[in-house]
Image 1 (cartoon, rainbow, N blue to C red):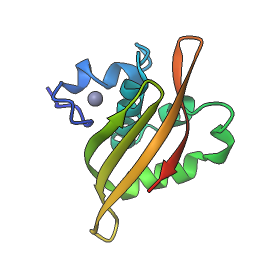
Image 2 (cartoon, rainbow, N blue to C red):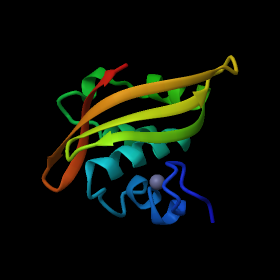
Image 3 (cartoon, rainbow, N blue to C red):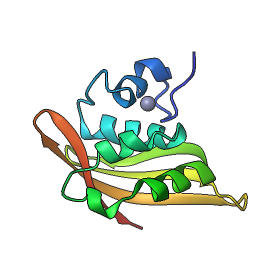
Length: 124
Ligand SMILES: [Zn+2]
């Protein structure tokens, strides 16, 4: 049993995995955000694109997401603030030069037909 990548203190198969495998829908923006972080950890680019809102999906491409996901070693996710549709978080990772990095973003999410989508984010 593996602890979930998203630092929820739950096991992966009872946290983000069912969303990434598309067997369950993430019920909240925060659970979607957590599962997208975990998808970076397991390099599931299809899930990251599928959960990006169709209106902004064109700004993302599979190759770049895969490079970002795989070149970095994902250490930790910290949720700073969460509202119904926005999540501010910090993702800590080690880059390919073995330097510690932090990605700090406030993301906006939208629910459409029972599914949550990532729309866009403000980076700090
Ligand atoms: Zn999780």
